[in-house]
View 1: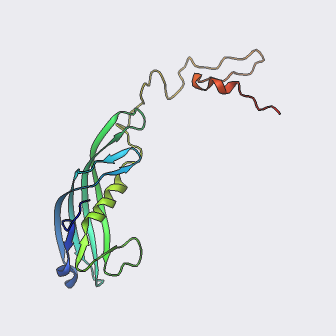
View 2: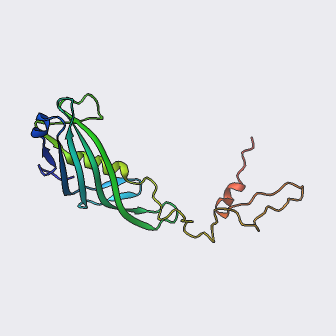
View 3: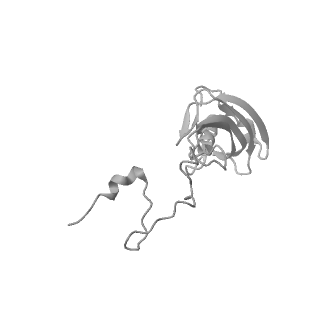
Length: 179
């Protein structure tokens, strides 16, 4: 996200009193994030609306809330540009002694909100975005998803139905693998 301490949050007071919580709202510029054809541009401002809560387990905090940011990409069917606002739910655990990769570290008396927000946004980016659920592709009349009624195979002279050939693959029809 950004460099410096602006993404770090002091949590010493929360660690001293189990069951206490703090609401945090921040707007932070993010570094470029990309998954497949979906992108959050560098410098995009992400809005964090989070709650940090201490748990009964000493030295452990939970982070819940949402992170939102603008994204853009390419529709997987029609290849038109699309954009939108991504809202990602955050459910993270921070610990002074993280036992596995699923738990974020508490460093001193601070947690890094930026790293958790960045991961949440990255995981929420659509892998294969659609401009709409009804998108039929770039030219549905020229390339229908279903064969039209007049595209029935004609019978060959020997009675076997012929295959419908896609002209783009016509060169492969002449390929033979005879020994």
